Length: 329
Image 1 (spheres, rainbow, N blue to C red):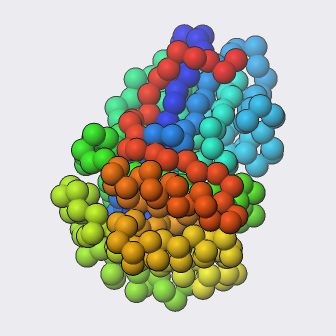
Image 2: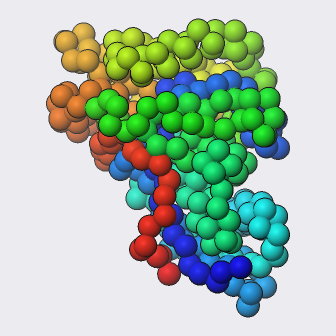
């Protein structure tokens, strides 16, 4: 096998139809099909090198040695790559995000997508996009969506072999923007994995599963038709439903904050005043504002004026995970 550093870059993504709850927790096979958009200005860069002189994997995240939980999770993913490549060589892996980690901006999605691309190439493998999506999914479910580019559908499937993501439209298909409004950079105390495990304890789950197929097709059609007035209400409904499930699970999970509510209420007022902008939320305190490119500057300006807003990241649809030449070590 080649002893060569390999570096990959993968974008985070924002789910329009959410992933919350697993059909198969071990392989992170989701309960439902979902739709997302890659984010070009929220990404992870990861460098991997397999080295026969190492006795254990060396994992660095954000310039510091990874904590034990992260080290175990990354090493487990490297084990999946080693199994595919039929090697036992330990690896050195270093990763950096250009956005806050663990705050509801899908940092694990970009992280495990970048790790999957870098590690497989470093191990001498040449996997198809589908195979990479399946591999990335096992590290973090939403990472499956960060492998293809642009607007993405994650086909839930029924097993690990048929649960993967595909691009339904390239980045240039629609000049849609995600203005990420960051009101907290503190890493959330309860991760998405715990939320997925708790999902079946919410009495809203059965109602959600029943309502999702129609909403999924509405959102998918809205993306393909570039219809924001159809997309917006559906993604707001789905985002609120995710948090209703989190708050009614056992134990309950609360990601909401006063600043988040303030941003949501501001969006409702801007829309009443004629500005075409909608919100969506992931499992965290920060708010994603979805609008078209013609309104992005105004949305950003209004968002910056809200008390409590710490940072704004404006994204256009991002591309597929890919190799780059700039190594981290």
